[in-house]
Image (tube, rainbow, N blue to C red):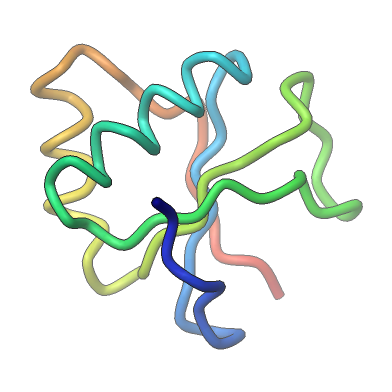
Length: 81
């Protein structure tokens, strides 16, 4: 299950190619007890997918390593604001 939204300024958004990949990434991180939340793509960002994965910025190194170990590569990562 997803964690609640992180406070503004402490999170990053991970963009993927599809909703399916985004959901797979969320499940993978949940299995590893890594806080992540599936959210609609904020209006200031353009995305073909429509959803993004919200993670803690300071913990993004292990997040990316866990995803890449499973062959999942974010298309883009950014901090809103």
